[in-house]
Image 1 (cartoon, rainbow, N blue to C red):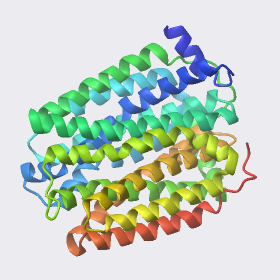
Image 2 (image 1 turned 135 degrees about the vertical axis):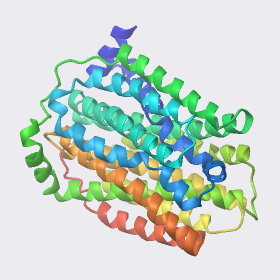
Image 3 (image 1 turned 135 degrees about the horizontal axis):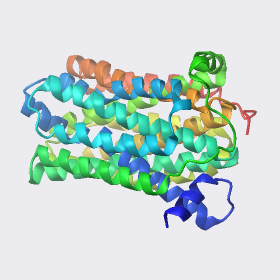
Length: 403
């Protein structure tokens, strides 16, 4: 079994539908077990705010501090990628991730909590960046879209089930038990990656030497299409973290006043995203990256407008649209980076992910201040403006991008 899975992953150009499904399932599972820690804790924000006796903005920053570690690690991995074996790096990162995850269950100090979240981010990002680079190096250009869509689908699933698991365990057993459960999932991811990810010769050389990584970054930053993608990455996680962090406080207070367990169930809004994200690659091939991305931004705007209402039904519909559209758009943007960077994929992925994660911590910090000072409607207005900017950047997704 490991040989079959490993071979189907390494040779992305294989035409067999069975091989493609196996590869996609494995990629999605690894993504799920890598990123389940990232957003699961967001569902616990109201409870964590009470436990640590701090404001919503302070706790929002602490929970999302993982994106600081993710931004830093994505650049470091890119700089030293030529020295890191992809498969080994992935499973070791996931094994190490389980340590700060478990320690979150016993810490009672907010500073320590924040540091542990940063460490989680370092290991999550290392596994994430190495996986994307592994796929970029071993997939043909036509297969990259499907591989990336599978990875983003696992990301969506981690958002849904991570939040449900965190809320359910915290509500029925306690906060510590939710973190212990995530630690076990990290170890499961390490075991699966150890068994099924196999290093081998890449289809093309794409990793710069450490001494030339800065030159590679300059080259990528000089590409207007990649610059647009990096800016979009920043906005995408800024908006996502902003919405799905602070909406927890909105629905926990009147007129909604939902208890913790029901707050977890709200994240069933991610179910449509699990169904739509896998088809992002096919839709992009048929209609083009630019029209597809612009359509996702239009849907996101509609969803954000619904979030400013006082109706729970419309709020849930808005969350559904925002979640599905952002994940779909992220899949389009991530694949676009893979296609546009014809060399030094590790450097390109590192820049994209660094921008993406910096957007996440900026969303937690800046939107938290806006939310506390001016309220939810003002926060939604700011997010809507950013989506308009993302759409303008999406005009750079020219159809003559290398395929």
